[in-house]
Image 1: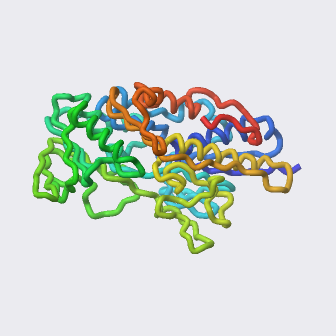
Image 2 (image 1 turned 90 degrees about the vertical axis):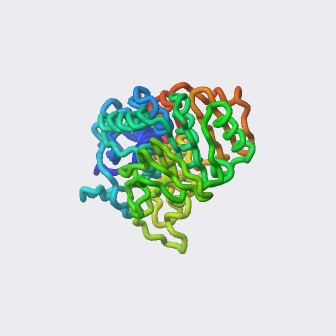
Image 3 (image 1 turned 60 degrees about the vertical axis):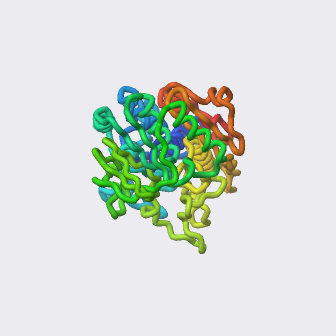
Length: 416
């Protein structure tokens, strides 16, 4: 009997990529149902050598001792050392219908692909490091700039800017911290103005952040590197900070900051997705790669390619938990397709559409949440708030501290 070899590539780690790896391992490598049927090789491609709990990055900057715990090296995760699992540290340069090419020229052929490359931010929220030691040094650099500053200006009132301003002011209460946002209220997205007003009240009156709303920054001297008129596929390598800077606002007002941090949106990975569409619709839409409910790319040409997490178009608000669930669905469906003993296509699982949600962690003592159209009471929200900003929950959910239990892909298991 000829042994069939199947190669799976998971492009990108963290919440989506690692949860896909976890369930592929549990259903295809650890499951006895796969014995003597198919040899499955799974390759994880990540430019970093470990998982990073991005949710905790703002506090990681203000508290480097906590920040160092956000990085979990892959070398410490037992099941990732399985002989049929390969960790390929590198940067994806190009994705084609049957291969992934890295920036060093290496090509990885695949039978199935999970695209979990996320989205990118400028440093220091975006992480340029590839190892934990580099990451710790990067945090120390940001902390030194922050610690020496008497005044801090955060530009951009999205979720990241809000949480960073709150963490800085709470950890350094004697510093002047100002949050500048171009709109009349912070927090873009499908949220109620009531929530936005509550956020402003907490920042101003409970925490002490100065708010400058409805004013766009039109000039900054000196400019930070991210303001250069150049495009980059790796904004994590470009700093969005400046020291001893003066900002000019649209209304003519000027602000000075000993340390200025710009938290202004994200960059996508559209340029590396080279998958021709078989329809008039592009593969990469306005909100990411178009996918079906099965997490397969929404194009008949690519039933073997899945996309999940921030890079896919499923959700307007990008959330770690939703990324993990989409990765679970992708892994289950790949495992079912490989494990199916009949010539018929197996029934594939579908991911539900989740209501929009946001949980803002404005320092350790202040938080607010909206789920769908409901703004939750503080005590109701408290059950989802932890001192470590969900770090241990993520480690447990991704099985970074234990070996995932084997199960059949035809029997549903907890997603995380």
